[in-house]
Structures are given as structure tokens and as C-alpha cells.
Figure (cartoon, rainbow, N blue to C red):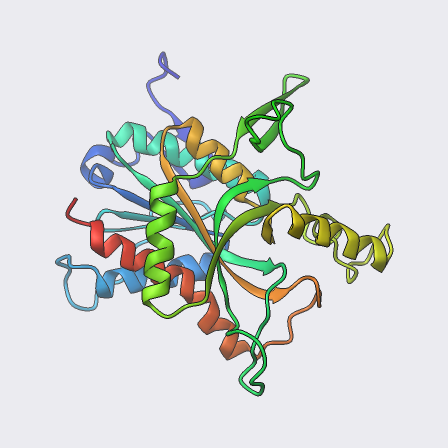
Length: 303
């Protein structure tokens, strides 16, 4: 793009001439992303209310995207943008946001992925039950693995990778997340009284068969085979399943951004495939990762 006068960030609906990126976005220090449009919008509103920044009373965050594929809000030094579901839409968003940050001259930016997931090997307590640990356990990702649960060929490194098919070749990128940021998120979660664990995250390329569910329209395995797979994942240190962490970790590392993933586990996949938790309780659980990240940002906003 070095010979082009204008770069079109097509999926965000903006170009390098839409905004004066350095003026509008040059102070960005944090990027918060999650799948849901509504969840990211609500997070931006929460940031506007609680961050120590000056804003006129009654002002609402403005969506900077001019397409219907993503939403993006700026609140002080925080950029909030949704990524949709899965590697495809996430990688598109990250590519275009990385370029946007480059044009804006942003440095020392930390990325967070907040979301929901299926837990593995966790006990949940419903409001109507006194058994087990509190529901809505937070899982902070140490490293992300794919559905093959494969380690690298360099056995000494024990490194996991995100595999991309490029020009007819299979290319592997490490799925390394920032240990210091992750440790601080864990500390904050504990201070807030949330159940929290750290572990590996399995990132599947499909919600149903890819995550070993039995409740999809199509299923090519038995319940026994499902349980064997999930138990194998648990034995390898996997504590939750979702559809983005490998791509997120690998791309942020390639672009030299610090990154962390914190998701709430909504159920235990060793016990069930479908959610039975009441909607109001689910909403409370879904807010937990965002609250932890908000607290982190408040502590570092003046760094």
C-alpha cells in the first residue's frame, strides 16, 4: 500500500481519508474486542460512564464504522470493536484495525478479547442450588490450541500454533499471550470476588462438531467419542472452548501488540451442551470479563 494515496478499510466502511486518524485515534492505548455488537456497545457506554475522562452529560458513544459488518467506538484511550464469530471475521477486523492504529501513530497498545465460552471440568452453582462452586467462572487463557490439540514438532518448546493456509502452504504462528497482563487480570478478578482459573483455550472452527457438541443438525461421532475428546483436552490443561483465541493471540503477537483473552464459562461441556441458566443470570455472568478489563484499564489509563 506504500504507493497508494488511499487505503480502503472495506469491512470497517472507512478509508485512510475518512478521518484524520492521528487526530481522532492517536491516543488509543487499549483495544477491547468481543463477538457481539450489543455487548461491545454496552461496554463502550460503561467505559464512558466510569473512566476518568471529560465528556458532556448525556453523550453516547458514536459508531465510527460506516458499514454494517462491525461496530467501533472510541472512549478516551479505548477502542471498542466487535469481531463477529470465528477466525474469518476476527482476522478481517484485526487486519483493518492494525492498519488503522498504524495510520494513527498509536504505540504501546494492549488488546483484550472478552467473551463467553464453554468451560471444561468446572462445577456450577445455580441460584436454586447450594452445590458446587459459583457459576460464571472466568477463564484467562495461557495459550490457545486448535481442535487437533497438537503441539509443535519441536517437543522441547511445547509451543502451540495457529495454522493459516497461504498461497497453497500451511503456515504456523505461535499463540502466545502476554503473561504479565494475564496475571494482573487474574488478580483483579480475584479481588472482585469472581471465580477465576487460568488454562489453555481450545479454539474450534465450528460451534457444533468443532466443539464436540451432540445437539447440532449434523453429528459424525458418538457420545462416548465426544467425552473421550473433551476429557483428553482437559488432561492437556484445556479449561474452555470458543472460536477465536488462537487467531487473536497469533495475530496480535505478529503485530507486536500485548494481548490477553478473558472469557466467562457459561456451562461445563463435560456435563451439557445447551444452556439452562436463566437469562438474567447469564447477563450477569457475561458482564464479568468486561468488568475485569475495565478495572485494568482504570489502573493503567495514566501510564
